[in-house]
Image (tube, rainbow, N blue to C red; front, side, top):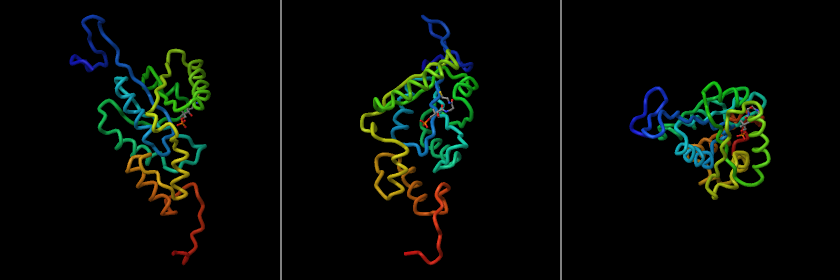
Length: 196
Ligand code: PNS
């Protein structure tokens, strides 16, 4: 960003005149946030003037981490980015984008397998809101096989997820699976006296 950033969201440029700040939203479930998400947030923060990480409030899904837990984790994991903030949203992504005056939707594509679904969403969102652009970015290759779903499964089954999620998420995942009280999607029998 140039030194002459104006408070009204418009920056001046001698050659090109007033330039609008480009705002992007990065929508997703983030259940939990992974190093792949953080890699994409970092890349997005370099390209866009403002990046809003938007956690979907989806009453149909039964998440492992509550909306508040996910917001708390993402808030703390992104606090060092000056142009990134975290929010939650319900309803259509295009409606939320309009509400926060976003110009673009940021999504990550890991492999060809992501492409078909992402293309479908991008084109559907374009049909709903032609002015909103979807921008795809590729996370680092070392995260190309990483997903929140696999992280949940591996953590649940006691495998190591070191290096795939931030330490804070790793600790919280361990806490969830060690303490059945913290799980909301699993009905484990809590028989008294079964402690090892
Ligand atoms: O992290 P995810 O689960 O892959 O994110 C999917 C998300 C949140 C981007 C998508 O489900 C979404 O946009 N949901 C909001 C409802 C909506 O706009 N649906 C129509 C999409 S074309």
